[in-house]
Image (cartoon, rainbow over all chains, first blue to last red; front, side, top):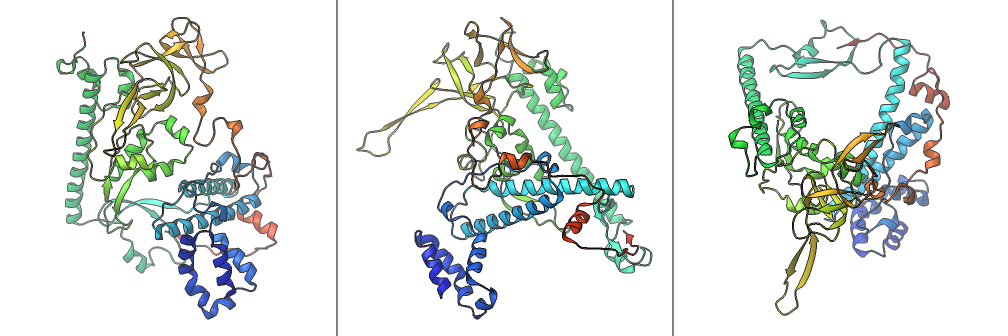
Length: 256
Length: 253
């Protein structure tokens, strides 16, 4: 009951938000297990509110933030610092995702959604730095990078697929169950037929793209008099630019 | 195959617009694509998606709501021919002379660069005046807006020595810096400060720190000391966990 009053007082300034949040936490607050959920209520309140945004940012259209961490900046930091930073970022991401969900349920635009991408980018950079350090150690000690191995194999249909390898207790020739689930061979006539048609489809799409590029280059030469032709050749290596350069159809309305 | 079409459009976004936005690439890519349905990433599905594949680039930035309203679903995007340019030479804050139209021969300062269309907006020049009559009895409002100008032939940079339009070339100084040089007088045309402006700050020094930002002192502090151990081993040492067990041999397949 006290918790309920507390939340009501907390959200009083914005009646719309307060209604939304009350409807969310209503069943949780009334449940009998609520008391066993936490040791002290003050601590519980504090920890629960870390899932939500800061109070002063509510109702804003835009929340400004800085840029993400770069790999060069993370390479200076010690392992312990990186470990701490990871959990700060994870917490922030958790908070942002809950807020996004909350706004989506109430049909409001989520303010500055690029923050999620910024956090994700810095998490990705942090992981690369950690991986680099581990790789260096394993290369020095064992001569192999300690990454999970994988191979390119062919599907049961015959399409190329990247297979992530796993650890097993028994060798491959004894493991019958694995062989049933993972088929990396295709010796059926239907597969060959399928692959033939699939290749034809890809060839057609490539042909379409080539023709489209040809058409685009023709249009460029027709419209713009002083095109940098060497640069055009670099961008479109498939197109024969010299063929279209002085063609009669490509001469525009300007004086030659 | 269809997913590649979306990625192609993201490649067209200019570097200057990305620099101005100060946003991660993944967000720009995410905000540009308008996909209703995408097949789940499972072997029994082919990679298909339903939605808008291409975008028409205009004065509005591609991640804004305005551009989304322009490029609504099931509207056709026309084929637009854009001349490829190797080295972009006109930046925000440059003084420029207009070569065509009503304001021919006038000089102004570049407000905005739209690299996707080879366009430039010059402040208070080449304006279009439109009258908007919203209600019958009330007086109508007049709106003035800058119209875009093509970089290649409708606008030219100005030589600061004689304040006349000139052709330029990119050259290197003895120190290895890349600079713009006017071909007539051989004078260097410096790149303005406004060129490095972003959405968050005018200049780097004038940036105001937010609540959740880490300060520059903390970022530049070196705390890493190289040791012969992995990330996990180092942390275990710090916490005080000892691991002497030897893992049994396993088969990888």
